[in-house]
Image (cartoon, rainbow, N blue to C red):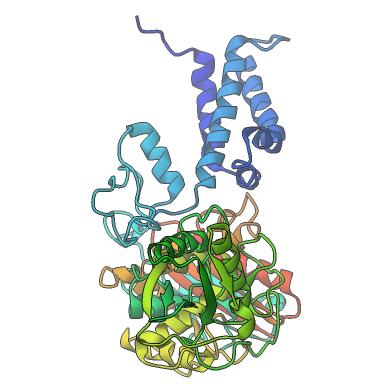
Amino acid sequence: MVVPEPKVWRAARPHVVRVARAVKPGVVRMTHAVKPGAARVARVVKPGVVRVASAVGARSSRLAGSTKNLTNLQLTAGAATLGLVLSAGAVLAAGPWDSTGQRTAERDWAASHGHEGGADHGRNSGTSSGTAQGAPRPAPSAPSVLTGLGGASGADSMPGGDALAAVLDPLLEAPALGPRRAAAVVDVKTGELLYGKGADDALTPASTTKIATAAAALSAAGPDHRIETRVVLEPGSDEVVLVGGGDPTLTAHKDADGYASLRTLADRTAAALAKRHLNEITLAYDTSLYDGPELHTIGRDFNLAPVTALMVDEARLNDSTSGTAERSLDPPADATRAFADLLADRGIKATKSADAGPVTASKKAEEIASVSSAPLSTLVERMLTHSDNDIAEALARQVALAAGEPASFEGGGAAIKKELKKLELPLGDIAFADGSGLSRGDRLTPGLLTSLLAAAASPSHPELRPVLTGLPVAGFTGTLRTRYPSGSTGTGVVRAKTGTLTGVNTLAGTVVDADGRLLSFAFMATETPSRDPAQAALDTAASALANCGCR
């Protein structure tokens, strides 16, 4: 027997679906409570759910007739609303992207309607640039993040320069952006510069420098490259050396979450030593992979640990994984002590440890254990989403190592510039003093940033795709999660890297405009009088670009 859909629910359903698919910032904030438990989730979303259920109930009452009490159908509609909202929150908790460039929320929504397919999330798959051999293929139906590059969507609707200028010029002349500002907008499909306001002016980029660092690292080492941390045994001795490979995401946490685990390294080391009947060793560490000073020119700072080839959990002295935090003054020594403690838990007594200072392992030393980082693509995405300075400086040194330059601040900057030149990008009068953008000695142009983003979307450069998939999503993820209100046209559409120093505010990323055209943009301002108004002005300009057909 077929039971017809009740008229009340048929009328209410579009409102319920629209609310669930909208995923307002309140729901986004709710997702942070999903993992600890459903009870916390319910508490977070309760006010919004009550409002939604009431609205649906009111709509149902008008359609069914005036009644004083809720009907069963109204209660059903409210319950369905709660389920949809909670489901949307759970989807967001999984993260914004999978390795193919799909939004995770879109992928899971499609999968829930198809009961087939899966996704390759990269960290443990052996590759992040495509589906690993034997892994389930990505779920069908959800549109690609690069839909606007071809096909019908936006194919014949490139914005006009004059129309763009009419929209952007007044916004970029806002007093909040100070006396020096520059901007560029590029059509990603053609690479054509559609709008330029000092597009070739080299200004302080702050953390939008990380876009260049990411592209250079992916180009030089490849998206599937992994950074090894090794343990070696000197021949004919009991001397064990922990050799740093430059992986700042090496973690001592019980849940490694797909990153290299110091606990796993201790397991493998203990097993290798047991086979050699060694239960007492001397332990040292080797950080010789890096050159030059460990301290950035800004000095000791909660934004960046001393840059060394060996550290655990970015040398953070709390349980955080992003943002500012107090850092260890001697990351390699602390990492080695933590490793000694883990070996002790596994029956291996380690003496000497970190207190004797660094050594350089001999070429004859035998590798007895190792762990590998997540793929470089994953590190790039984490770096861009959370503006992670420690990963940025580590990636700059990976570029230096690949280019034959010293693995230092200076060598990393030179190597990044060299790699971008290989990509045939418009360099102009640019400079790299670091890989993170913390230095005021960095100089980039809006033209270079937009060209980098366009190159990352190009079919000829699939290795650069994580530059796009790692960008924070306005109102949803990373450094843009709280910057866009629910009513903004840029929410969920603007995907951009932020940059902030005192007196410097930048924003560079991609946006799909009202006609479905994928554009890259870079807005840069220096000598800004105040951070928050400047950020708001940049966000408004990016939102205007998203709302613009501009032909």
